[in-house]
Image (cartoon, rainbow, N blue to C red; front, side, top):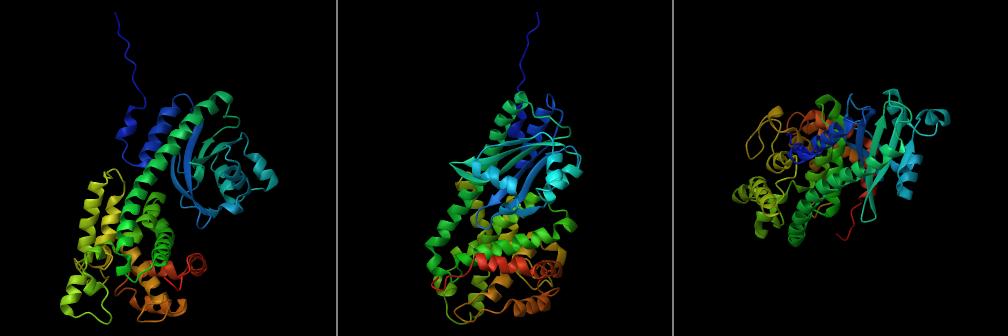
Length: 379
């Protein structure tokens, strides 16, 4: 007598540790009976800037779109889908080539040999935050039966992405409220954090091809860079708020903020039950090493050159640039040109020259960030 045990194909999902691994796992399970769906991808939308950016994908080949970003307003058909909240099937991607209706992303997908697409807007509590794309390597892949099943899969993916981002948001919100409680302590404003995190993202995006950085790395640079000075929560007010220069012993205390930041992150991850947040090493490195200097004169570990983690080198440049171009109680804001000259002077001495080049070569984007996240003169 044979006993037939039903094996659950989804069992391995919990074992997959990152959102990319989870997406690949889901894709694998689907491939059994939907072999023609050769690519699943997720793009996220930033409502502050209207940029849509690639996030994760699972594909049998290299994905035609990575490290790609565009304004949602410039992608007519995607903007329609986002506005309506309804998914859309295109069983023959040639129609876009005929109308010249979309721009390079549709072309890139077509050139990669994909012939059909199913696009679902990701929504939670009525809030739109990105898209899930399924692509087929043949026309007319998306029959009624396939669509019914894909809707379920798409909701699962939406949930996974939302959950991952909620975990990170809980962490960030907890830290932000801690910072707000002590905000009276620190002259640095919210505008500073918004700008420097966008500058960090810009640098990461620019050097990504050379360092083979994926979209998730760039995404976590954006999320984690505002937490670089978290350790200042542990610095006494008498030092943090002192008008005028600090003496040697005060400087020594001030410098403990990077080590304190790392300790605080450990505690928060444990107390918020957020050990599942991926890429936490990026956060550790940013908090601990953003004051290291290229020539080894920085702190806490006097690391030299390439031995400084890349994310810390990126954040250092973004942080210095925003400090120079912002008004502070003790100085006026510098112009971008003056700040660029100063960064070039520091390149290869205090700062990573490659990261400096990456920032100063993106003048238009820098100006856009400065427009969107202007400083409120009243703090």
